[in-house]
Length: 345
Image (cartoon, rainbow, N blue to C red; front, top):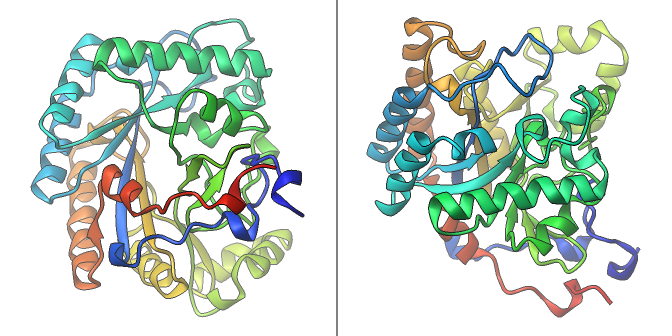
């Protein structure tokens, strides 16, 4: 397959020549993307109403924690949050202070124009009609420009829901980075994308190969991790075997997130990813988790303390491994100029 026959679709594995060789001086680093979104009932059907943007004190505490740790988060932010003047003002000050970056995050069911039925299938914006996906993306970017004075360059689809047109639309909208591909996960059974077989390291995507894809990081951990994705898929196909392997610490799939991932598993995942040669460890969580009572992951103050304890141990381990935090600008500066061979013919 040649570049001319690969349209840069985010649902297709990249070509070998699309893989990005980061500047060696960049080393191995980590980044933090926060899916910054409204609070809603995670157990209820999707709805255009019945949500709020109230977890501002929790977000402020979280930002202070990461700033003190010299971590510059990228807050990929959806429409209800940037449409809230209090939230936008708070985050805008973080950007002005050089302590955070703002990107875009699209939940289609609460992002205008509201033209599609609200269903589970339609919660993946990349699988909506192209014109609807584009209109929603334009509305989000325009509102962000009104609130922050600039258009975003980083994007993550809500529910990781990119589709066949997403990379092209992101290129057209001026984005430089996407971080929607959740490698080693398959959402096709829920009407969403299948990211099995996707890389862990960054690569060029989009028809013009002007968009950098930085996948979310997911490791295989355990004594059988060398079997990788092929063995994990085989175990999943055999029903209870996958759970048994995980409980026996033989093979488990571990995303880099404090949400429902025990710290010991996350520490093992960090080491496995470094061993695998992953150059950017891409951590993430949802902003409502920063305040008790909004997500299943932080239900009370004890959970909130555990959340910060998790980060204390993770950051200490990263420091021991010589893995420093990278900002969005530092990462993009480590991306070399696009080679001629990466251009569509």
